[in-house]
Image 1 (cartoon, helix red, strand yellow):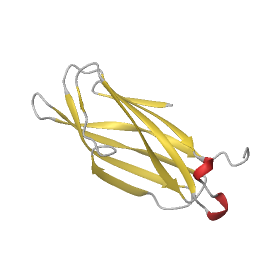
Image 2 (cartoon, rainbow, N blue to C red; image 1 turned 180 degrees about the horizontal axis):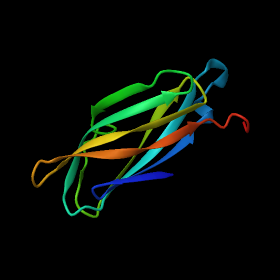
Image 3 (cartoon, rainbow, N blue to C red; image 1 turned 45 degrees about the vertical axis):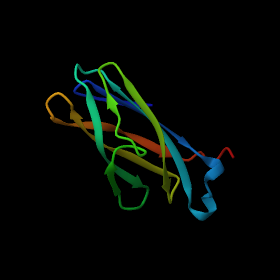
Length: 128
């Protein structure tokens, strides 16, 4: 698990290789990642957008952007957390992801760019 804190907002990520959904012989590797966002700031915040940079070994990085996370734009009061699971497909058994959440501080409308820490996506294809 990796963690980053930006202005009191803690983002932790844990990635898992999904061998049962992957087909290494067809260059198809599936990963899931669980994200926990904890609001340790004194302000209520809302997650509005996300921007991911996905790197696949030997290939150009791709950028994925969009509103919210898994169809939600959660509001987190101080002391609260939001957790979700999402996934990523790679063409190789090794890659990495990192990015940012764009959040709004409800009290004054200030945008906070929160770091999503870089994490590794590594297939365990030797123990199947």
